[in-house]
Image 1 (spheres, rainbow, N blue to C red):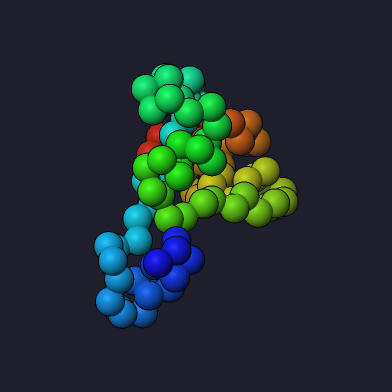
Image 2: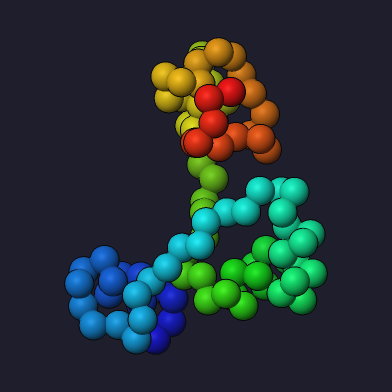
Length: 92
């Protein structure tokens, strides 16, 4: 079963070899250490090695109060920020 089949079957409650998983997106600072530890040289290789079934697709977002959809939430409306430092778990 490939990753796509696993994802769609998991979403529709059909039998799968194992549940689809998304391990998240590591911060930029964590990548070199993860690459060394898992002996890979790219994020794609890392996700394949960990059998991650999902990839994030960053969709452009433009509004007067935010330069990325993650910043469109009320707690982040204190001005434009850089996308490289965004998280949904911080208040700054």
